[in-house]
Image 1 (cartoon, helix red, strand yellow):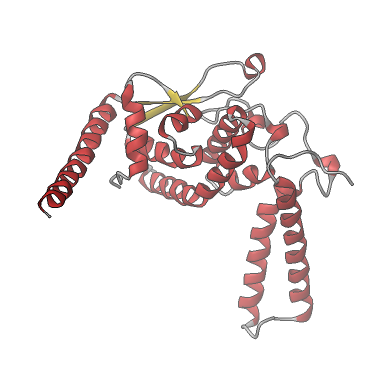
Image 2 (cartoon, one colour; image 1 turned 90 degrees about the horizontal axis):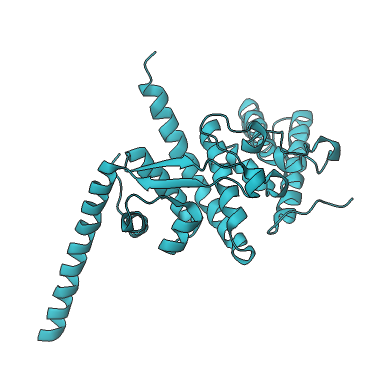
Length: 166
Length: 108
């Protein structure tokens, strides 16, 4: 099986995420079939396994898209994300979905929907114009700042929802 | 929440203040500040949440231009005033501290 081209070491990450997802699924199946692991109360242990498994799958799914199931890859950017949704609202657009490192899409899914779309579109726009030698560094900087950004965006989103009159 | 004026925030503000009416996009801003784009994005987001900065998507046809639209940022009128106050305020204590150090060095 040949993998499509992805920039800046995305392939090992993809393979790692897919293997992580498969391992977590296997562990979840094993936990369900053999009973509670790690001497924890059964319900708690199974809940932890289920939540962990769901989290791993949530992050790994966009990465696995088009890898485990090649027919599912959506050509022409009509999938989730700004490229697929056109210029709706403030989301912007980025016609570079074909060359997008899948990890970006995974990260954007951790953010509130609109903010995630905007972030993804902006990252793609900047990476598109960044010199190829600097692109990996720029991408790493976006990924490094992503956890703080996710917290910042959700904090803003929650405070907006709280303040919104009913 | 009050904006923390870190060195990186001040660099972004300085870049935007150079020509307050001018719009800068992410890559341009990171070139002017020397910050990586991943560092300047959260700063711009916070500045925008505080109302110091406003942003818009470039209005182009990406297929015709053969590149994605850029997100342009510029200071708002009130943001420009607050930013220049913040930058000036940040310069003063540092200058005073340096003068203090210089005078200590001179007397030693």
